Structure formats: C-alpha cells, structure tokens
Length: 307
Image (tube, rainbow, N blue to C red; front, top):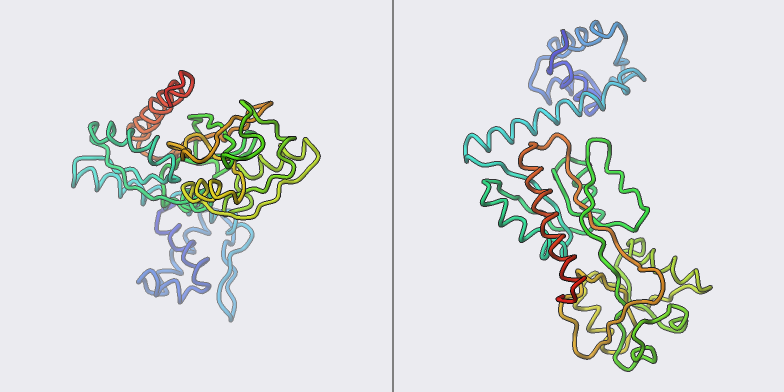
C-alpha cells in the first residue's frame, strides 16, 4: 500500500542525490530509506531510482512520479497549517499577495469584511513577477494580479483565475503639453513625446503602449522607468515626459499635470484574483465575494464620474 513516507523518500532522494544523504535529511537510517524505496518500487512494479557509485538519480518513471508526490505532500502541509491555525486561533488564515494599488483600493476594504467573518489575512506585497512566483511556490494561497487583455497568466492547473475589474490606462502629460487642451488625445499626436514607464520593460501596461503606438507606425521612447506612481507624476509635472497610468493607481492627480483619455479603443489592464484550488473553500469564497463587491463599487464610481 502506498504511504506518505514513500513519497517523502522519493522527494528526498531527488533533492539530496543519494540514499545516504536522504537518510540524514529525513533522520532515518539508510536501511529504512532502502525499505521505503523498495516498497514504493514494488507498488508501481518499476524501478524509480537508479543507484550508482556516485549517488542516486530518478529514472524517467521516478521523474514522472515526483511532481505528483510533491503535490500530495504540499497539500498535506497546507491542510496541517489551516487546521492547526483554526484549532489554535478559531479562525482561518489566508496567505494573500497583492500589488500596491490593488492592495490599497481593492484588498483593504475586502479584508475588513473578511475579518468580521473570522478570516485572517496574512499579506505579502510585491510586483507581478514576485506574486506569480509566490503562487507557484505555494507560499501564497491567493494573489491580486494584473495582465494585458489576452495575456495568459498560467500560474498552473492548481489555481483558478477570477476576473475583477478592467482598469483603464489614462494619459498623464505636463500641463503645457501641446495635446493638453484636447478632451481626448490620439496616440498619433504623441509621436515626438518621450515616456516614463514601469521599472520592468515587460510590464503589461508598457507592452500595451508599444502595441498601440505600433498601430500608428512608431515606437515610444522611454527616458525614465519607475514603479512609484507618485514619482511618475512628479517627473511628468517637471516636463520629463508623459506616462500611461492605470486609473486605480492615479489617485488624486497633481494640479500641475493634465490627465486625458486616449482617443480610440480603450487601453486597459485586467485585474484578477488568482486562488489556489486547495485553499479552504469557505475562506477563498469569502475573499472572492468581498473583492468582487469592492471592484463593483469602484467600477460604478468610475462610470458615474465620482472618482
């Protein structure tokens, strides 16, 4: 019969590179490691580990089994953490990641509701690459993320993606920019404009700007990069360049910049919450519902012109 110890041994051998090192890591004797490995191989009727004078490596069949073993062991670890936390503190704990603007305007109001329902949030803030890495490593059970329309986030099959909000990108210009008098600004008129972009050139908003400018036959020139939107507005006001800023991140614009929508099809970033399927159904469902409620309030405010 297959046992969890068998899977632990397989994972340890893959990581440590020998049966002896695996025994030390798991605090087993080497004969115990050999016994568990033999039982596992007997269960599948196949050799899973190739042993040699320089150590041990997984066979192709062992490599095929390894990710399933890791998934089973990780799900058990998550179950232990969730149940122990609930038993000790009487509440669920969700490990949630967010990028800064979504944390302030989407997650914070949702957390207030979740706390009333007995769900505690352990928060990690970061930019998109670190959030996706946290999901893949299972250090995060959920994360607020953003993407360019049509992008595939693909954290992996253990996650569900729930769309929340389409966040329009607005043009922010120095107040004396030639297009500042226009109600809507065509990108074709910005051919000679220099831009302030995200720190990561592969940021979805920057990629969307490159795509949109390409439709008008030119490539935007970036003179500065930063992820701090207050810094972006400051340098726009100083005349360094223009920027596309998501509406959710704009806040109250400075009085010395001009904020306009672009003419033509709307450029937006899509904000979603990604949730690990194995997360406690009740707490994950409450998080999704609370975020959707807040996203609906924000969207309604934008449509009515209140914010």
